[in-house]
Image (cartoon, rainbow, N blue to C red; front, side):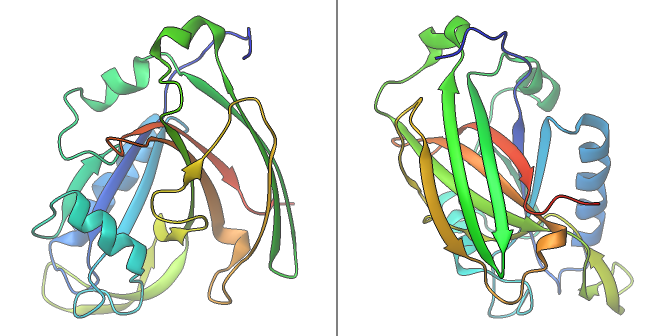
Length: 225
């Protein structure tokens, strides 16, 4: 537990999208605009959940599981914090006090990711904490991917820049139990298709019952400069 003052919360915006969806570039542009307005408290994630037709290049099977969980029926579809309906708007969610503080040490060499992570509860927010009901989930997203995209005109842009692309969960779709205040140390091997310079690690705390994301923090996988 930490006595530090809790700041604003972070909201996770999940945009279910498709590379052959002509309506999706507009949604992706709106996602980027909202990210630029509210960052770092707005964590944008573009999930290509249909690998059979819509997004063969950027599909990840983990995204399909979230697609089913969140009852997505068409593209584009937006969800917040991994729930079908989030009753508060984005600004109200961000203005809530944060509950947990994430501290991370990230070392990357030859695609070997050494991660040390500590999650602490803000003492002022302990009444909102659900003891024993928290899972740690580790997502990777990638920016600046050049790949094809169907445009609203119907044309195919083969040099479309995709950002916030969901590249999977390092520790399973629903993660694993974590003990607050205890150091979490793991090593992961990153897949060859990732460019670590353009990747972020999204550290999530998820309610193990409802699967709602209750805390999220973004860290660059590789420091620039």
